[in-house]
Image 1 (cartoon, one colour):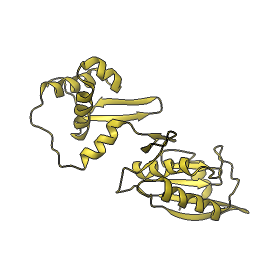
Image 2 (tube, rainbow, N blue to C red):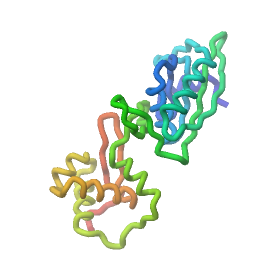
Image 3 (cartoon, rainbow, N blue to C red):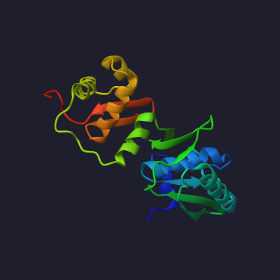
Image 4 (cartoon, rainbow, N blue to C red):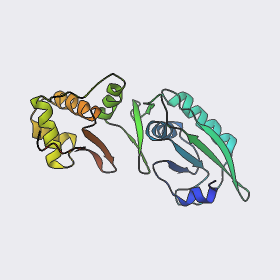
Length: 213
């Protein structure tokens, strides 16, 4: 079983975040949603970003988390909590499992409801493509036996460029923007294209060799 020291030694990553304290329910709601939408995760409250244990008042922090989930997450994010102790300092551990009710949304800085995910140790809003992929994956879809010309064009452009942004696909394909969006969503759902979230942007890459198509 991992000790508090073991957990902190991991640092912040896709499944773990440190918080000195919770003073903004809207922001922490984004982290809760991101964990639930990605692969689950752990919040350690009372730990600074530099891994220093400062402790917290668990009851107060738990109320803030409960309020964030109820008021600022759609749908509400399920979590469990545990109080850990280091000398006389108390740490609140919040465990968020991967949700079967994704996507969970929280409000962005403009007050719009957006889904969030974890990218390494960051919480980021997802783009319109991933939002639509989530919607499409809830529908019965199957990969066609034969691709049309536009589908082949997008596939080959992604394959030839290795990793490509959506804006570059717009320029290279010269197709209507909405058409590119729709094609890209379906290619991802058919498991032919992978969407890659990096700290410097979002890229798309081919999962198979399509040079002979």
